[in-house]
Image 1 (cartoon, rainbow, N blue to C red):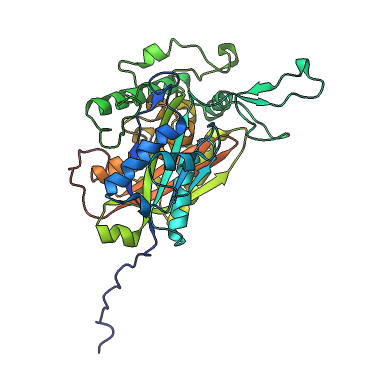
Image 2 (image 1 turned 90 degrees about the vertical axis):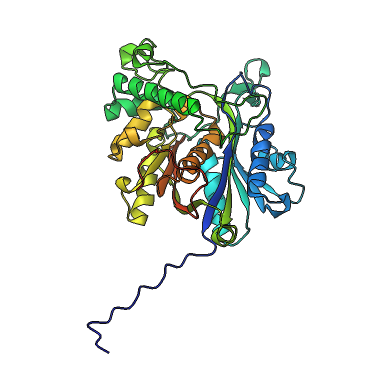
Amino acid sequence: MNTLNHVEAAPPERTDPNAPAIVAARRTPLGSRGRGLADVRVEQLAAPVLRALVDDLGLSPRHVSEVVLGNCMGPGGNVARVAALAAGLGPGVPGLTVDRQCGSGLEAITLAAGLVQAGRGTVYLAGGAESASTAPIRSWPARAGGQDGEPQRYERAPFAPPPFPDPEMGEAADLVAHEAGISRIRQDAYAARSHARAVAAMEAKRFADELVPVGGLDHDERPRAGLTSARLARLRPAFVPDDAGGTVTAGNSCGVNDGAAAVAVVPERLRARHNWPGLRILDWACTGTDPGRPGLGLVATVRQVLDRQGLGMDDIGAIEFVEAFAGQVLACADALDLDPDRLCPEGGALALGHAWGATGAVVMVRLFTRMVRDDGPSLGLAAVSVGGGMGVAALVRRVGPPSKRRRRGTGSDR
C-alpha cells in the first residue's frame, strides 16, 4: 500500500451517551409584583410548569428522577419538593431547592446536567421559581437590650460579610456603569430597545409556545409599548443622587416580578432514542469575583467557558444575558467585546421582568425557543451576574431533528 496516497476516513464523532441535553422548556408569564400573580404562591407558580414539561414529552411522572429548582426569597420548606407534589408527580419524586440568588435558576439546570452526566438519573426537571408578591416578611431575632426587644426586619440577607463590600444592587450597578463609562443616554436607549423588542415579540406571538398560563395570567405584564429614550430620560436616578453622578433609574433597571421557568434535562441516549430535538449542554461554570461589583460577575464566567471550548463570542449565534440593569449588562458586553445588539433580541429582564430565582432559567427557555422551536443558531450562551460577586454561564448546542415549526429568521445561524 502506498501510504503517501492512502487517506483513512476520520472516525465518526462519538457522543457520550450520558451527555446532558435539554429536550423541553417552559415558563409562566412574568407578573409584576403585587399584580397579576399577586396571590399565587411560589409552588403554585412552579407546579404547572413542571407538569407541562412532563406532558410535552409524553412521559409518566414516574419517569422523573428529580426536581431541582432555584429560589431566593420563598418560604423555605424545600420549594422544589413542594412544587413536585403540587404538580402531581407523586411522592416518589424527590426535590432539591438551590439558592445562588439571581443565578439560582440557571444553577439548578447545570446541577441537573451534572447529575445526568454522572449517570445518577434520566429525567430531571430543573429551573427556578420566585414569588416576590408572597415572599414572607423576614426579620432578625431581637437583640439583647434592643429597642423594645422587637425583631429587626430586613429585605435581604448579606451577600458578603465584613470587611468585604456588600452594596445594594442599584448602587453597585451605578458604580459599574460609572467605571465602565456607560452614559445615562446609552442606558436609557438600551432599556427602551429591550421593551420595544419584547412588545414586538409579544405581538408576533413569539412567546406563545413557551408560556404556561397560571393564575389567570397568559402574558408578560411588564413590557410597555411606546417607552422611548425620551420618556425614560425624565426619570430621576433611583439609587445615587443626580448631583453625585447617578445614572441608574427605575426605567433602565429590571422590575421585581413573579414567575417560574424550567427545562427537562435528559442523557443523550434517551434524547436520541426518542429523536427529540434539543440543546446539548456542552459546558457550564460558576466563578467568583469582586463582591463590590456584582454586575460584572458573568464576564469571567463567560470567558472561562468559551476559553475551555476554544470559542469566541463571534462563534455564538444566540446570546441571552439576564438584564438586571442596562448599565450593568452594557458594561459586561463591552468587557467581552460583544455588540449589545446581539443580546436578548426579543427583550430581556429589563422588559420582561426579573423573578429572582427563576430568571436564570427564563434565559435558557428563551434560548430553547430561539434555537430549537425555530431551528435557529447552532450555538447558544446563557449567563447571569449574581449578588455577592459571582457569575453563572452555560453553553449549549442545538441537536436532533429540525423542529416542526419553520425558523422565522431570528438571529444568525452560527
